[in-house]
Length: 623
Image (cartoon, rainbow, N blue to C red; front, side):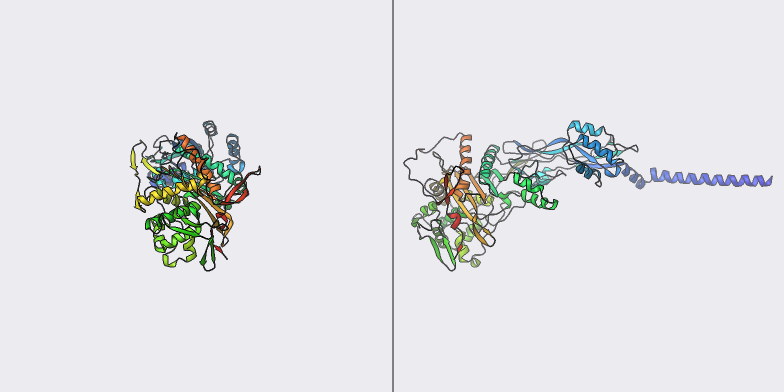
């Protein structure tokens, strides 16, 4: 009996101990899962994912409010690979709904963390994806960037990446203003498995982005793109820049780089040849090419401007009084007094002889301009190069803007480089710097900071900040500026810039043809042709610059860039209904002088066009 009682007692103690242990374990679990905030947080984190919700990114419009870039609601597919139970089955379901190949879908399914599928999804496709009810998959409505007229200003506006942040162009430069403040969304995964949006506190507060109003005139931009595209196809150059500026304010009215970049599809080749080349490249090679494709020639690349720079030399000399309307120059075909160097005139075989200041500009005579810059002097020349804004960023508000390359201090520059500077060799500029400098020579002499954004507004359309024209300094007098306007018009009517002539209208212009420095020497086979047009010549409201890098089968600025500039101006005149202001009968006019002395096949039908000899002899030719 005593033995039985003893056993029962031991069993009771054991059961008590077991109950105590269970109670302790349950208590501990209750503490860990319910009361302890650290473990409770870890448990919740296993059950939910937090996704960033992009605020509505500010729009980008032209000067009249025409929308160029904007946000639009779109469906976004999110995948959480570590939670997917049957990847093979899910792959097949996704491929039945979306136009994505197996390799792409496998990349999504086998990634790490939160995967955002880089593909456009329609509402019907979104509904079908959500009907799958698979763990590790969710479809969210978010904003995506869209571009109207995406081919018209891709290199200027730029584009956003997969993270909805600006990658290049204005989208990148003004990222902090455009992006706004992101919100958050929680995705909660039930133990049974389907991630669904949290019913409460789905979004944290977010702030919509500011919008940009550009100075761009879409009507003119459309003309520039249309005429530029035709010119690009005709000449097949390596690249081309066309800029239009209001010289009286510094506002950029048009900005186009060729080949044209499609902001809506920036990784697609810009030409058929580029598409084919990209298809044959490794991923690393493609990345390098992408960065090349996304550069804006207008602000991020430099070139030697050639004879367009003679406008700067002439303006500086006239302002300093070292050149006047009575000054005479003499051309015997070349400059021969620099040891080891021969600087030819384009008319080397038929020298110009005696030339006045006006005739030197009309004929674009290199020896005359070497004489002109020598009279100006090294110190004055350097001061004016700096004053016109070369060798410094313009401050237009664009990422990675180039400063260019200018001559060293006067005491360090050699005679050959000093001489060739007079006609735009031995100096490298961006098209943006060049058009600003030309605008300065014709607007009364004031250098403006180029302007691309004129207003910033908030989500309610209220102006946050507006930008007025920003004059930086006066470089030349109104008297000198008036003389430059007259010289440029005279050059179109009677000189080598006749490729931009439009009967009945007052157009000023100057050609440029610079040979390129290739493999340690100037190569006559690779040139940059350019043309600057000023309209109307007597009271400019538009300065237009066309720069063509390595055109095929054409060499002079007058035969490459000038026709494009002329077509743009003709369309601009028609757009604005501008009536002729001069006598359109040119039958009695003396045939204009040109730099052209060679003939070159131009068209398949056998016709020939004249080509600028300057393209072959303007460089510093060593003997």
